[in-house]
Length: 489
Image 1: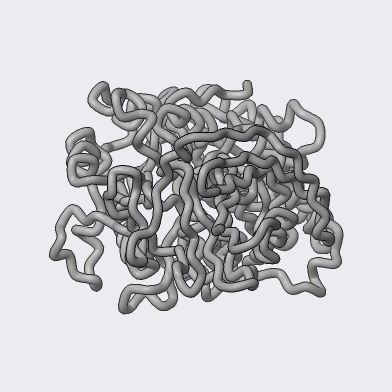
Image 2: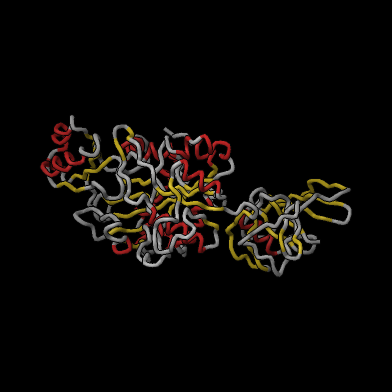
């Protein structure tokens, strides 16, 4: 009889016979699963535990776990090629290849299935059959609050450009995407996303959104964290993004770098935190032999307010200008060597750990600073580090540090870490840790050169922009997990 292998998060097909098919064995071994075979007979059923013993072989340990007689378990079955649940409702699935092999028994509506055809594994990407995501992308409509005397600058347009890129491209990948304006044209930014206000979020959920892509700046008082109307749905709604408490803490560059500096194993430039009151004293402390010095906001956006100062007078003038926006300014020693950026992906069911994408090296700086991508597209001044260049152990060393940062703070979405060598050929240091990397990408007309630094890194893995977004979507967390985040410090 046809059979099914199941596990809490994975389902793979089994075909005729008393033993797992070649395809099933391949999946068990590759994914190292603890799984159960449910065998159906005319009058009896048997549960059998199956454990893969390692990669590169097909040995299985099979132990009988239990038998029963009488009525068989009530399981959904395909009827005329259509998958239906126990109540006969149709199950929609964009990733299941139903033919030519029957995949007949589904133990529950919450399980997922891997795409397969015959004995060859097509993909290890899993998608929930009965809870396929309905995505609504949020844009920044709320002015960020003042946090410790500092307000992060709001991006003009509130990230609606990248939000439209995300929504359109996911839609092209077959993901159901809601738009605030169903008639929004592909060439415009507005209408593809929902405002991140309580009203905007509730509107998306009322229209059927199960996944909210928080393409915005979050903070502790944000509706995603505080809205009482969302609380009853906190286990049903999923969020792509960082928890608000994480962003509020670690968007402060001086705070995060200061915490990392207290720990072993992180390489950082020397830095100073200054106020209008201690500016003169700090400038004297730095000394003329330490220049150039970089001055920047503690809660910046892109390269806004970042400047390489060549002497005391430049530094004083620049910081006094920054004080008009914020009572706190961060100074750092200037790192003279190569600049690169490393995206660290968050855990997913398929890859349950933080891991680094290939480094992207930056060039064509403007007075020592990489220009804002809204002025110069990153495709014009960035490229993936080559395989030959990767033989330099400094890249691997800093990639591991970036992964440790993401793991330490508990990132639930990609972060991007800007790094730079102290000097040419030297070691890298972490100098800017971005909680919300830019996520623009090609796809919509006229956006061909709008790949983000993360999308450039993804291309080295063979991922197009849409595949990158699909992988990020896999890491979505329930709103309850999102809200219950706790800082490691």
